[in-house]
Length: 473
Image 1 (cartoon, rainbow, N blue to C red):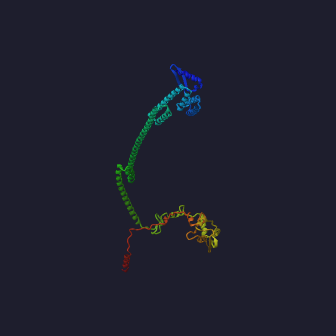
Image 2: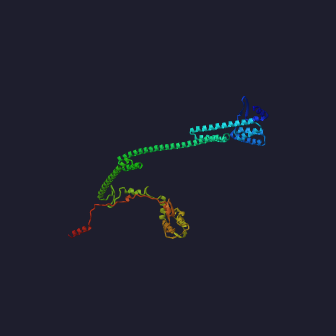
Image 3: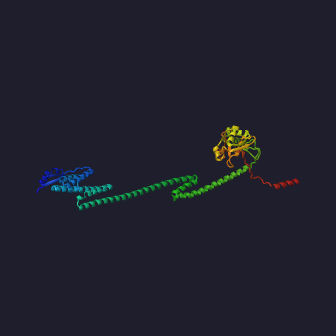
């Protein structure tokens, strides 16, 4: 029986079924069903819409609204091709609507989806092998895993044996990719080791060549020093060469030779110095045999007797001690010193404070006083220290000495000094900070007593006895 009239009749009774993704075409051989092209929405939106349509279809199916359920399942298959729940639900709705021809169309669509899944899986495996041949292991692994995931998503489209066979194929390819990656890693590591060894060998050869050049240059320098008879310096360079290469034959040979030459050279220098010093000593002895004599007008060292002589320029040397290289007080310091040594005072202190005594001396002498109270406090001297002193007329410097002797203890007593025209009273330690060293030329004050090594021996007993004998005759 030709099912075409029934299909057309059913389509006329249910015009809303035209929303199904099938087209019925009458041919001489029967009916050809071609699925309508599905939309290609975004994956996330398609999944959400498909889930919503499945939920709506389940509600219609539970409420026995077969036509609405069949339309909802058909729409869900547009967004979720190959979804088993949608396919089974659509079959159930069509069965209830007595649409056997539509069920056949669903089976045909399932076969189309199965074939598409096969093609996609085979393409993924072939692409993974191409990437593997190009040593793109990450790309091959990603493509193979993608094909395996798609196969798992379409598991219910295949028979169990076919699905298991394709899974083994994908697992084998993944294992092959892992193995090839490991082999390539080992090969790369081996290549790196070979290249590192080659670089190390080249660096060692370059270092050895550089060392040979340096040794050659040092040997040239040794030869130059040997010609200049600088054997000690040459031996130092030989030691440097042997530090780099302790078996260098030329350096070992030259080391023994240079050590021998250095010994002979040192011996020659010592002999020459000994002879020169001996000659100088003999010359000095001959000069000592010259008897001194008075020399008042020169030339040469001057003296008024034969016991002491002075350099010929002794007046100039004496003047130098008071010149720029000597020490001389400033005019202000000399003026203060003159006042302290000439102006007399008759002190009459009875329990006066140290500060009062200082003020009194400053007013009497007219000299500016500076008291370093901070330094004095360190040694235990304060402004309120009592002073008692009664003397007749004495110089101001004597009064200062007697006053300061009453302050402090035996170890630390105040001292006074003149600096920059001011009389400063402070501790001894503080005043020593301003002490300067002055060097004097006193060569004019020195003389060397002559020593006569060849003077005759005098026997006083023999001389006296001879004198006595001559007197008795």
